[in-house]
Length: 222
Image (cartoon, rainbow, N blue to C red):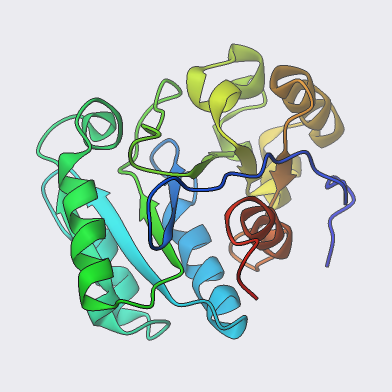
């Protein structure tokens, strides 16, 4: 179902990936914004479309997110890998993405028909961004419960991502957030680039996220 806050026509640039093989899409955002839950909603939707995919998660010193996805039953556990960054999460996706690049290459070597690799960053702050050496397209996830001032703060993650996802819209009445205002301020900060509101607990708005990714990097797939 399309949310009233989501516009059908979104401006997402097409990103032909310069490397052979699977398209690589990053998912970043603050701790607790719903990155892993979004991942769990995306997996069955892409599988239903016949998209061959694999998952990489990033955590500081554990494999907790990867193990959660492996236990979910949504995807072959062998297609889910973990990177333990051992430092600030943005280091492994921006300054030195070597570990993630190696993991993506290993997954493509093992599953040679991959169409898509989803790379979830560890939870970080509004300055977190992905290196374009690592990904072809990246999503930044914020949540309504984090405050309606996040778009106004205009951090690099909000400004520079290909798609801004505002999650947990259903909590707005309980945290005093004016959703139409947050939508306007998100659109102003993004200068016409794509913004989507989601409830990743129920899956509302996630179909539009799938469409945005598909238009941007899966244009030669089903």
